[in-house]
Image (cartoon, rainbow, N blue to C red; front, side):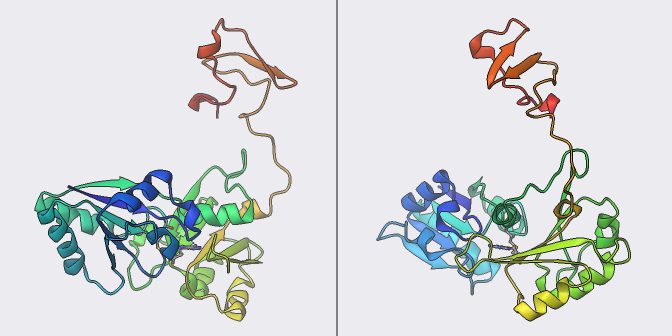
Length: 278
Ligand code: SAH
């Protein structure tokens, strides 16, 4: 018996992985976070599956669902929003499972920061100008360690994606204004991938007011990044035909790849597709 923690993705039902969807279809017990996991994902469960919403359960009650299933020898599909690596309460759940000797596996999902970037049709890294993405949150009811305060994160000038921070936007802006000019770009994606998705573009100077006007208070990804203002940038090495690297030397003319390291077709590495050349 296994508890499968499944990332359901950001909202659009098709954005769950094939593996996650198959597990929802096959597990006799399905436990999902009611508020954000779309109903269409849960509708995949077998008609006779035990389908439970964890929205009003505490950790003890959730653990009880796992224990009951364990005693019956039934696998559990534990379906949660986005990906399990970020603000998912996976750690506290698996700590209980470990103590109980119950196995678990994690099936990754599309995180909301990725869905927000997709909604914008935008890469969050730009060659030579921004090569790091920081995922964080404003300090609220759950405190953030002082060493991770927003000002120190902002000092990197990396793309900053803030979860769980919509109601704290004024505080976010106050802290970031100490590091950045007020013209620094901020984009907010509310309910990325949902039919009612909204995008608000602004700067540190006006984003709080714009969010207030639009009444955006939850399920929003706040992305603070200079990439939204960068127009002039170099091509990446990824598709640069003149770029050679450890595994091969290559040129591409009219989409035809020429290899000069003697590689046979099955050894052929498309230029830019080894880690070393990125
Ligand atoms: N594990 C989830 C995050 C859970 S924390 C993930 O990987 O996405 C909940 C926060 O995620 C929300 O406050 C919001 O900041 C963000 N979020 C979740 N779904 C979202 C969506 N569809 N659009 C924008 N932000 C979303």
